[in-house]
Length: 155
View 1 (spheres, rainbow, N blue to C red):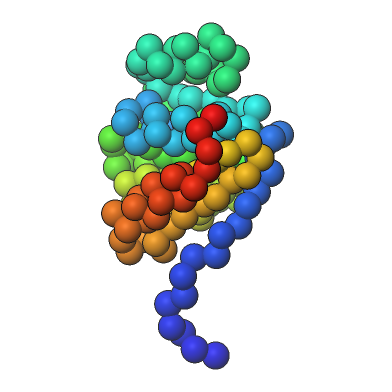
View 2: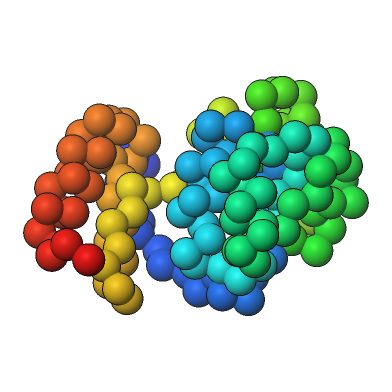
């Protein structure tokens, strides 16, 4: 068998009843959260401070916020964890803990510490399209997402 680098396989997963934990509430975390709220009923955000947008999502019942600093106990019941803090040491600790506990993890700041990647998402009702450039060309993936969005009628 060849050891050639292959493109990423698009795997669609039912997250409805999965426990998703996002550690962090900055720009990247918010992008991930905005995407995830359409796919899960069990999203928890761990961050000492959050902005109005996330507070409004919490008020609407879309997610739960724990206003605190991360502790390992925060992820014990998680099925998927997103490490999206601006502290590389905390992100590394989250990664190590997840790997030890068999929790699927994505460290936003380090693609070598990701069990999965976030595709560009296009959604129209129940039709969901995910686009990735396999980590090589994010601009090309973004352009492709916009082309696909243009195909769908305005909602």
